[in-house]
Length: 107
Image (cartoon, rainbow, N blue to C red; front, side, top):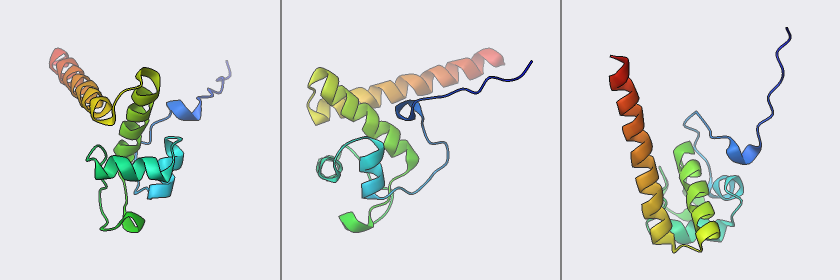
């Protein structure tokens, strides 16, 4: 039996390495403008992993996943950026707790 190739839409793919993404790459990855990213960094919703000024900012791949979730929540529910970030924090916490629970069940 030959394996069937699996095609996954780009918006469902999460980066697994810890790539350092630029402001432009992060904006393109979450289908938002660089101004949107800049505004969310200034509001404390997104955190650059390194860099002083906006031209030097580098973001971890996990920030791309976070930015996509925030953008989706803002769009779908017309959510305030702070509320979308809080919801994203809670989603990440629930996922971490589920991973811990699964690890405990394996013991």
